[in-house]
Image 1 (spheres, rainbow, N blue to C red):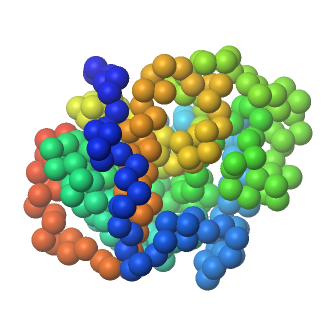
Image 2 (cartoon, rainbow, N blue to C red; image 1 turned 30 degrees about the horizontal axis):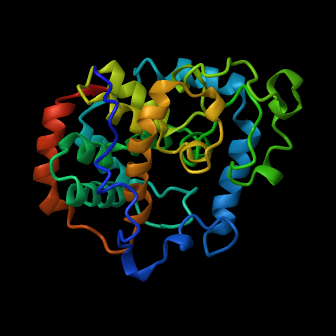
Length: 286
């Protein structure tokens, strides 16, 4: 697939006037210092940061990347997220399936001509279906970050949750690059295991013709230390830098459309089914 060098329309990207729901200020999103859901969120990240080692991630790639766990349509997978509440999310306490439509509709309003981008908004989280098949949420949800090199300070709860991770005590893995080379490209970096990488592998395995920009968003949309805090830039190559504006553009819809105002899923479903039929039709291997 051809990689576009141009980012999203600069007249739309990073608009400060993008409305948020229910009058919530942008600074109120991703609050990891308090709130009603703090204990649930902290415990999820504590387990993640203890157990997500380089060896663990390698095992999960072998276990899941072959897509041998189930066969179903994308809409079936999306509807199963009615059963999942993301325990790492400090902003919402409702099923993940509603967030999918909120994100997609936000993108459709500002990017009506980019149906692939709307589809990515709809499906970006359906890799979380792993949690319904037995994976603990700490191996499915939450922000992602590279393993195999030093954990950077912008990782959520960095100061208090890595103390029991064996990689933290491994001198080889605690340099800036660790096992990687500078500018090796994020394609060659192992990220903490989760729904981003899993869905990317599903889309690639099933040869879904989503543009490279869309696949890249799916794979790295939870990599907040990179796309929001500018860490790990030393591992990036030209492709990563050309894709970064798309990930940033996606992030504003992924984050700021979260609201307890639920979309009318039944009304929206026919339109989004048409996008699924175009880009990832039929029964897929998962």
